[in-house]
Amino acid sequence: MPYRSNEDLPSGVRHHLPPHALNIYREAFNHSYISYLGDQRREEIANRTAWAAVKRSYVKLGDRWVPRETEA
Image 1 (cartoon, rainbow, N blue to C red):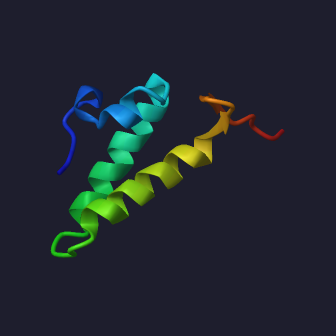
Image 2: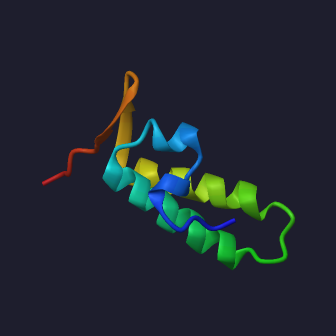
């Protein structure tokens, strides 16, 4: 199901990602979830898509997610 706000995200996501990464996750999840209407795996696909979107901008160092450094 699409998420209205970051507070609605699963606790495993909410408690591990910084606020900006939560926005990325939620927006990517919602877009993917709507795009795969009718697919039985749409929640799984949306979850994978959301994590992929987060990983484009953030990297996990130890137990923290930090912004990726931009290349000049």
